[in-house]
Amino acid sequence: MSFPKDHSQKPYKLLEHTADIGIRVKSKNLKGVFKDAASAMFDILAEKQKRKILAQKTLSLKQQAANKEELLLAWLNELLSLSAVKGLVFHSFTIKRIDENNLEAMVKGEDSRGYEIKTEIKAATFNGLMLKKSGSGYTAEVVFDV
Amino acid sequence: MSELTQLKLEKIDEYRFRIPRSYKPGMRVPGIIYTDEKLLKDIRQDKALEQVANVAFLPGIVGASLAMPDIHWGYGFCIGGVAATDIAEGGVISPGGVGYDINCGVRLLKTGLQYEQIKDKIEDLVYALFSDVPSGVGSKGDIRVSAKEEREILVKGAKWAVEKGFGIREDLECTEEYGAIEGADPKAVSDRAYERGKAQSGTLGSGNHFLEIQVIDQLYDSRLSDSFGLELGQITVMIHSGSRGLGYQICDEYVRSMVRCLEKYKINLPDRQLACAPVKSPEGESYLAAMKCAANYAWANRQCLMHLTRKAFERVLSQPWEKLGMYLVYDVAHNIAKIEKHNVGGQEKKLCVHRKGATRAVPAGHAALPHMYKETGQPVIIPGDMGRNSYLLVGTEKSSETFFSTCHGAGRLKSRTAATRSIDANALLKDLKSKGIIVKASGRDTLVEEAPQVYKDVNEVVDVVHNAGISKRVCRMRPLGVIKG
Image (cartoon, rainbow over all chains, first blue to last red; front, side):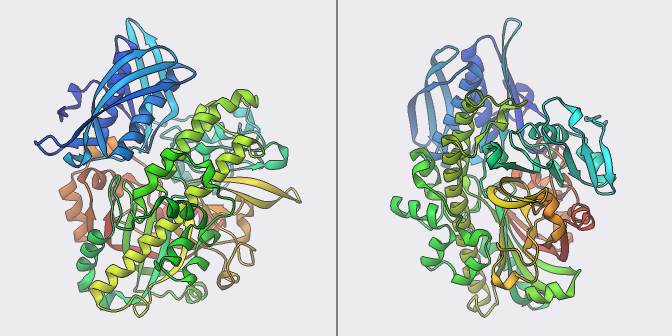
């Protein structure tokens, strides 16, 4: 995956926050929102440096939560945690199954040594967390502690 | 820029402003902001004051929801906030009131060196520190520990590092809680959190974390500076770091589990990030035990970082660190919750004091102080930004009104996105160099996001806490060399 420099090309919008970083993503369905939020998070976190693709790893992931907002948070924080533990930057997200409380996904990551790590994201937070139906799709807002 | 918060504050005096309980139904106590009119204009630019009011909803909160002059918009709690809850009255503990970087904190080392002696060596020292101290996002350290040792670190804290030869016993005397808070239980820490913290001992981290070579450029109290062995022109070193991935994982897991406690304990809060549980509940006790593990890990980490700093100085200056006089002045936590006894309305109460971007500041004679600081009061270390100043203060009797707490730094003024838009990294480095400051950073983004202009002026912040009487200025440092994670 390449990360375009121009923010207007990105599938998310950065929200102003004094200390932290917020994002807004819009998609026609829940799968799209979860996928775009994950892409946005790793776009903020890392930038591909080396042309050569280093070791790739595919992981399957299951998450459960009390509602769809908490599910989004659980998904993002699990990805952050796995990224730190496995030394991977995730760049491809396939949501296989999703409802209000459950998610099953396959995620592909590459050895983080092929990336410049730009911003350490400690966690996605509940602060200002929003995921709702809007018009013909869904909108989500997440604030990351950085 | 127009003021975002039109909230009507009551002015108590020049340095204290009140958010009345009537502002929001559900506030159990008022909010009190330590600031002056000038800083207040900046504080009003974001949602920090709203967050002070939200914290006042916490069950068992006593006195007021407090904010220091470095207050800014955080997540849940504002950064620069203090909240104390009465344990006997169902007082709660909130992981969000501590933050993800549990026991993020700062330590100050003095040296026996004068600026004039080593001014030509500063660049060599900066490069040596940059190469010898692992920094940056997710950095892994040379100090590797086994799984068994990691559990030991979580209980023993900085003492573990000293036993491994990374320091001396006197370092522990000069560390808050003597470098290990009692009650840490590794069983309260998940396997994932262990894994996330495993490779990061002895690493600086990223973002606002730093290692700085400084010179003392102003003395405010000669009796106190003499007591600390500090004088004008003396070289000091400041280290700012926390519990890294271990703390982030612990906080994330407990915030999410405590959201479920809100229903269980019938707690009504305006923001889920304030999720909490009574201190005296299985969930509260478990979080406290896990939080203490991360706190101890952070103290061990800063001890290791100091060891690497001493070794780098030895290498460049070809003298043992003892001869260079590199002794620890003090180490403080500024993201932590602690069980402390305080006088509330004439009665001694056991409180859970959350300091989220705030520093403990106990006065002379306090039982928590080691013998060498019994007469001075607790050293309080206030880092500023990389272009201006940092401070050493001491705790005062007057800070009983803030549960013996004061500010923790300059406080952010501008967002990271605003910084990236408006600041050029090369121009910034040139400007700092012209002021005699050499900076090495792991990434250009970090450098720009941490530029001096994105912070409040620490001199103004310290003026407020000094003039309000909740801590006292001892001396001021200015940066010479900065390593940014």
